[in-house]
Image (cartoon, rainbow, N blue to C red; front, side):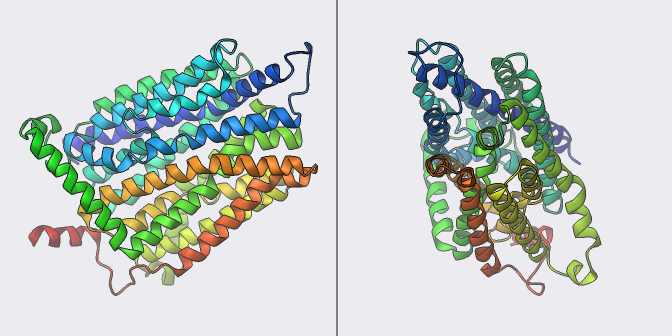
Length: 465
């Protein structure tokens, strides 16, 4: 292990943990605060205790949450350009800037809701402006994967992806659990803790050794100083042209990107609507609903650190003889089946126990992101890995953003049908979407056993050439 790797890997895990803890501790208190403000404004002319679960309040709450997610789509399209800049000027530098941008993005609605009598609540939708500083969540996820791929060998890459994901899931568990506990003191307290944690994540990201792809792990500051501005702009333009050729000219890559988009669109029904759905249908408080999210994260962590590794190690010999890509494809298919079944359970759950079962089954689909990313890695040359990672993360962000208004509309339709059965309409739609994604993945071709070469050998051959 090199000095760069020795210092970078722990800092990557720590940055991932701090960032995702800071993000997952916020959603439940933010929804509770939004509901409180909307409810107070709805009953402004009649003081006293009121029912905040009435349809007009819930529809406005779903709209606020949905459009807030949709607004992220604007900075998401900057993922590939920012990744190209990071390849030239330093991954950790852009990573730290992006995390600080997310801090500003989350701080804006905090300011708006802290002064609800001064600012209209819908001003929270302008938060996306601040995420343009560094590119936001999409750039952060991309660069965390790119840095890992840059400092470890190809054979260790998938394992490191799972470990990084596990660190993020552990952070999410802690975030959801702490959110529910701190909300018993004040709804604003966990939100403030999340903002402080993002500041710490910015600091740890800046401490990661700053390298570039073009420099061959040469310190980025030295590499940047050796280029003139004209050359920097020209090389950036050439990189963007190569991106377009890769994404348009490779049918496998195009099919994979469509698959990734569909999976993210379906997956986001859970975290987006869970608190609102459980609170409305089963009468749970938002703080208790956040513990349900922690349950999902706990099962997902168990899948990543124990079940998936054991599954790939102890399956029959016939499975073990398959190429790594084929193994990843089969496990990804099983993951999509679990996601489809779990979402449908949530959508049709007559009692909360069935909904909890659905949450657990959804968590069994953990790893589909890393598995699809691993499959995509085999579809491109090593020099194009950063590009494909950026495209995947960008499409996941766009899918997650567009899912907001879609599921908010479906939830409003369910409310209008005057029956609790239809409140789960967003989850039914997500389950059907995963079934379509499963069909696409089954039809997708991967490298067979005869055509497979270890990634490390393929890189050596490229280097010799």
